[in-house]
Amino acid sequence: MTPAPNTTADRENDQTVVERRAYEAVIERLSKASVDKHWEPYVDIPWDDPDFLVRQDDPRWELPAVDKLGGHPWYRAQPPEVRAKIGLWRVATAMKIGLQFENLLKRGLLNYAYRLPNGSPEFRYVYHETIEEGHHGMMFQEFVNRTKLPIRGMPGPLSVLAQVAPWIPLISTELFFIFVLGGEDPIDHVQRKTLREGQIKHPLEETIMRIHIAEEARHISFARHYLRRRVPRMPRYRRFMLGVVSPVVLGIMARIMLSPPGPMIRAFRIPEQVVRDVYTDNPEAAAQIRDSVGKTRELCAELGMMNALQRRIWKIMGIYDEPPARKAAR
Image 1 (cartoon, helix red, strand yellow):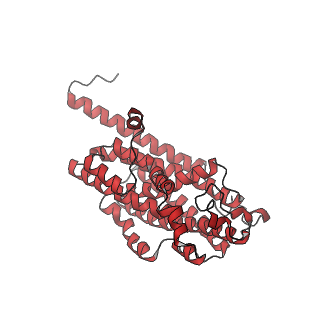
Image 2 (cartoon, one colour):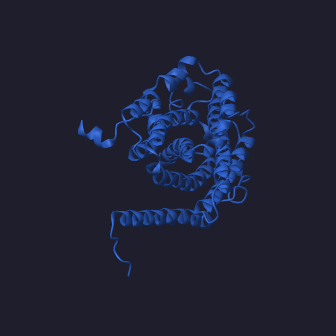
Image 3 (cartoon, rainbow, N blue to C red):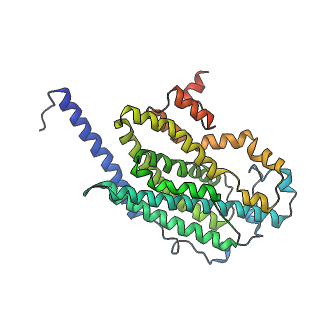
């Protein structure tokens, strides 16, 4: 029988051991889940099934009326084949940006894993995640290839700037996993919402989306558990700086993931007023961006990274929302 701790130091040491074991148990569970349930893009997706073929004029690509662009009179006035092509372009661009983000993510994860010591449980999980992200990249690119559209993904200057992301773990692993959540949470939020509301009509898109959601749930869980363990142990000044930088990273990432692609606007000559109506000056579009980072915002508050100055930066970035308890008190 283990004797009770006699001093405050003993109790703190025992608590640290308990927390470490709980954290490692989560990582082991996530690693086991990656073995037990995973997908191979060229095995589990029937690319050549006639119902899964990608045609630019397929009406199943049309944006639903509940979509901000899909419900706009300009869009509804377009011929059916144009509406379908715009919808397909939107989906393909989201996948291209997704695979570009995951390319950066994989390189950052490997930089993180490179310095892990022998016996680290994080090492195995990080390699599971890297493999899964590799499968996602192949799956997304295969979809883009089959559209035969000139999909670019991230704007060129932004793509060049993004090349610093894989090196963030060499400076701050905590900041890197904020970056991870900044790319994964907005897409996960939108994908779950569109599936829940029955907005996906094409079976290929639905299959890809369901695979992505299932595996990204593990990736998001790891990032959150990692931050919950590491951030409270950071020196106060570093935690303060992380709280200042985080809303900037999250605000930029959410807009990259959810904003309309410029090449699509130019290709279909979408009027500037329509873009303003649907995206730039639309309160619903702004709310979607805020909501897409809601879980990460709550995590930052939980970890003590939401003082008055930091909250002000969240507001400047357009991604702050009152906590539910504070809203209810009003």
